[in-house]
Image (cartoon, rainbow, N blue to C red; front, side, top):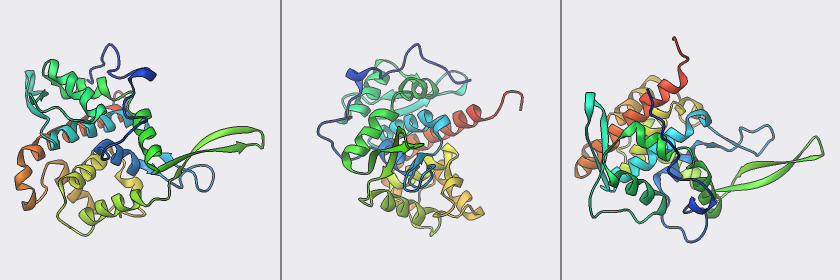
Length: 255
């Protein structure tokens, strides 16, 4: 059962770092949210929605933890009853504000992956989306509904970054290219989130693609990833937990 925190880790306007101001390199969670944005899936042409909204906070939180794993800011170990815990690597905090909040949270004491997902996930969507808008990856716009009411919509920013990310993931899953660690983590998170079938137009939902995606979820990233063995193992462990939580959240009780 997924553990729920007493309150979200991030909350309120004063605690949404990274929404405005100077931005560094995109985080893995930003890249994942940009990929999950489906540019032409809205009710009107040219508007989009975000895939997997029902379990989005688990997926984005998993991306934050995976990013910390790739940067060797956290590691994992075993807790009670075989659960997986996340532990901060001392003296190696991340510079990104959103990643730092999570690092600070797990630096207090080792915490179960599911506890961390539930604590950091609920309020990630807003600040991450703000960052994508600020970068020009996504645009916010207004459309008239019934000719009377203004409706807020999301549109592709037109800078091509989403297309490039999607092409990288497609090369790995369809063409069999050996992935860079971040691309491997993105593909694994898409697979673990259960949203990969929604990319069928660009990434055919075939048996080889499914097989490769599951390999990436398990941390099989290819020989070139040997130097990132620790980060790969941590990320694979986190992604596996994300997948389990998403499945549990989407299966009706009693099934």
